[in-house]
Image (cartoon, rainbow, N blue to C red):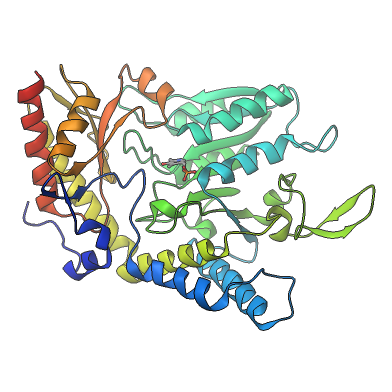
Length: 414
Ligand SMILES: *Cc1c(COP(=O)(O)O)cnc(C)c1O
């Protein structure tokens, strides 16, 4: 596995958190699909803002307020470039993917009679690969409006197919929601084709890019994508930050959920006029330092090179796949998924929680459980899994330690 393309080793020194021992062993942090770490330059960008420019935005004529506004709007511009937004797109800051997806689903049913875009008899299609954050809001949207929720089920290998989607689309389909990468299995669905198909059928399209942005942000200009959601903390940025971007015409359909300051044009006692995008969906004081840190993270990814990061994490996944498949009794999910950045697996006769605990004793951080995708794992007839997920700072040596530690855990547990 010496052909693992190495990113500059100096990159790792940007992440002080990785330079520690856990239970006397060097930390091997392989839980990046849950949260990545931040390079020093992201922390520095946030600290610079907080110690030099901090003030509330948009309302002030004083210098700090203007600087803070410039920092916030500059972050927006950087992130727009990062996802290939054009003049027809808008970008709003959120607290993460979960808030962004809730903003879409609730924004399509809220607002009262005659205002909601979703109606009784409409159909919503959600893929079966989704994180709960891209399922539960749609369950509620269906319940609140009398729309029907349909699931684009994956096959036994965990793949979703355009043909299956074509069979589900009808003239009543109003929404199609899909992930750009399944966090429970690593599957990377052909989202370009699936979104196009749904858009051609007249549906609004929603793409959850939480698992993709760290090594291959979907590009809005090239996609039939009305709504794109992602989180900062899975792309080397701060926790509690994220983005909802998409077509202006689609974002304008959303009833704003955060009503208050900064999102209105005029206010009377009985009514108010909402501001145009993006302010319309950004009521209240935003996490400005977070937006600044998120933009610094996007810049960092761009400079390292998303394609180089993708090659790196995919090579680590291939190495882990190869190593784990060599252990009798280990079954890796979605073994065909060459673009995956994570490896999710089950072990005969050993519970993932026990495996995770034994791995932690060797300094190896992995995630175990249902990965917020319980219906998917049920559909595949699987219980909880163990998941190792990779980022630009991980090494082939860490993957070797992972495989050896799983082999050891199997000896202990079986
Ligand atoms: C992590 C994740 C989410 C939720 O992201 P938050 O940052 O917790 O809001 C949604 N979808 C996918 C695919 C994820 O991996």
